[in-house]
Length: 113
Length: 114
Image (cartoon, chains in turn yellow, red):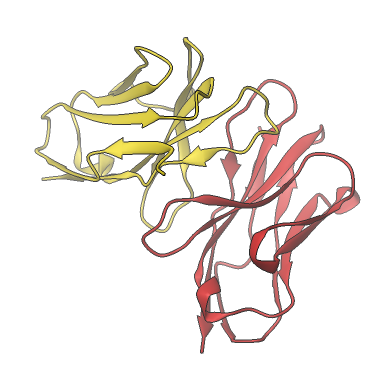
């Protein structure tokens, strides 16, 4: 039973063409996260939502934005993808405390042509 | 800002060998420590975690880790690895106050040869 679902699993876009990645969860968790993972590197946090409160990382480029219309769904918008944005994008969820386990989705692999 | 160091980037072992993967963090306050595993083609999943109590924690699939506060370490161990343990292993921390997001180490790729 999938708990964190990401669509699509693979996304190909053109340089500069906006793209949206989606994440949904069945866990009813308060917190949702977006991580970027480039090849052979650790996942790097882009931003997270605590309920409706948006928390952006200081070094996340303005090109990356996010929306959380309700508890279950969260979207990652890349306004003008560059070649350097090709990566695996991971969505994760957790309850509200820092000790809580984060549950990851399978990721969306983004290719920019 | 906190950081996490994993010293072994690529480890190759034969089946039944013992495993120890190093993890050190830099943060003076209270931390919560995690080991996540990513099997080939699968999503990240939790192996084990520590946030209080007994510093020796046991996780799934026979893994354990020991939190040594004086050394800022949280090393992962398994007495006898199997081919199915081939995966990427990530150490990660969260801070007990404020920041809930995981800060990951760079990962250790474990290859177990049959």
